[in-house]
Every structure is written in C-alpha cells, then in structure tokens.
Length: 340
Ligand code: RAM
Image 1 (cartoon, helix red, strand yellow):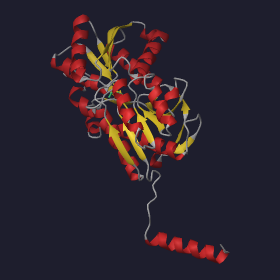
Image 2 (tube, rainbow, N blue to C red):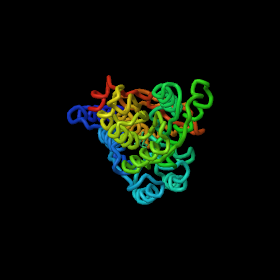
Image 3 (cartoon, helix red, strand yellow):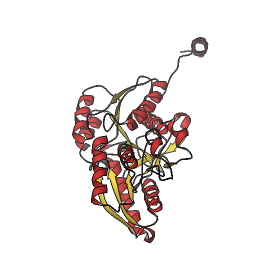
Image 4 (cartoon, protein in one colour):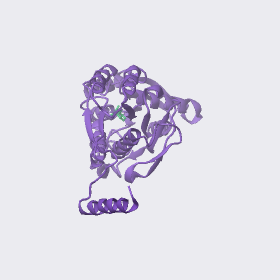
C-alpha cells in the first residue's frame, strides 16, 4: 500500500472510530466458567457476582457453577461437563488439594486455562491462584484472636469445613505451626478439629458435640463462613460461656458480633470479598490473553485495581495475593454487613 493510501485508510479508521466508538474490553469474546466449592454458600455467590461483573464489563461471559456438595467428586462431575464445551478458562475454588489434578490437567491439555481462587489445588493442577490473604497472615490473625479471646490460656477447638478442604487445612496447619513455635501460645490447648462440611446443620451439630465433650471449652475458631455462622447462633441461643472467632461474612454475623456477654463472637476476620471476585476475574483474563502464565515475578494490571505481581506460594507454586485479612467487630460490622 502506498503512503497516501495508508494515511487515507488510517484517517478513515480514526474518523469512523470517533463517530461510532467500538468498546474493546480486555475480555472481548472470552468464555469463562467459575466453579464454586458448593451450592447454598453465600460466600461463593458474592465472589461469583463480583467475578462476573468484571468479566462482563470487559466484554466476556461467565458460567457460574455451584456443585451440589463441597466434595471433589461433585467438582469432577462439573469439570467433566465443562471440559466438553469450548471454555477459554475455568476458575475454581478446590474442594481437595490433590483429587482434582487429573481432571484439571485434562482441561489444560484441552487448551483450557486453569485459574483458581480461595482454595488452591496443588501446584501442578493450576496455572494461577488468587489467594485472598496470605495463608500465614490468616493463621496468625486467627491464632492471636484465639489467644486474646481465651485470655491467654485454656481449651479451644477448631470447627472447620470439610476434612479435605485445601484452604481450611492450609490455615489450620499455619495456626498449629504458629502455636508450636511461640511460647506465648503454650498455655492454649487445641482439643479437637471438628468438621461441619460447610453445611449449616452439620456445623451446628458439631458445635453442640464440642460443648458437650469439653465443658471447659473457652473458644471455638471456625475458619469457614458457614461454620462460624452456625456456631455463632448455637452459642448465642444457648448463652454459652464459650466464645467464637474465625472467618465469616459480616452480613451473616451481624447479630452475633459484640464484645459483651450478649454476643457469641467478639470479633472475626475475612477479606475484601468483592475484591476477591474482581481480582480473580482480572487474573483469569490476563491468563487467557497471555499477559501472564502464572510464573514467579510476572506482573500485570488488574483494571482499576492496579498492578499485581505473582509471588511464591507456601505450597511451592505461585500465587497472587489480594491483601490482608480484615477484622470485623462491633465498630465496623454494621457498615461492612451492607457490603457482603
Ligand atoms: C467458606 C468456604 C470458603 C472459605 C470461607 C472462609 O465459605 O469454605 O472456601 O474461604 O468459608
């Protein structure tokens, strides 16, 4: 093409562009599946809505999948169905560290990018992991809350999600390590790790069983939004002397949060839920478009959230950390409960 023609074409394009602007989002035409741990857990609905909002605003589409139970089998069934369709990426919160590996490798072999958020499958099963808050940071915040609420000594128990849950197990391991390594936790006795399977009724039953088995129990730490909400209600309804902390949604904990005797939970933690959905979306888009591969030290721009760097994860793989755990207490619970 001669120079005059090139400039005429360019000029025409620019004029056309200015007359009818065509929005080119970073996710134009991308088809992404988001797989939660299970159905009926508000945590995943909030994260998935924020994820979808970002992808849609960038021109892509999202299929949100909520498996019927928080098990690896239920997720494998869901993945089987998704792999047979032409998704550009699957973003998953894993119900098991190792059990999804073959299925997620199959997805990657089919050319589907695999990102994960919240709960990571092992490093060979993923390309990118968005960790809401550093694993040790969560363990430290929870351990210090237990120490503080117990008054420095006494029996405490953990009410977890499923026994296979990758994220809960990582936080529990971090807590145990912190407890063993520092003398200041030496008067705390962890009596049991119970599992409510992220089901409200089972979590309530497990709370009741813990109180019956350990009448002197001072604190329950529930690092699961389902578990903490169930335990909070049970302890408060029964006017138990045992107190509660853990990870919860402010909207589900508002009636139970307070430092006085009338409330079962003095304070608890979580993270920016909307940010988790948004960052997981931007990371998945960046993975599909080839801006990142998941390798250590890569950087990318997550829309208006700014620049993020891929760092080393505790499991030997890599991760993108959203931020720090946030504390919710009687001072901020009302405001925060309006958000999530
Ligand atoms: C439950 C789920 C989720 C976890 C939160 C804190 O909703 O187990 O994976 O991150 O609790």
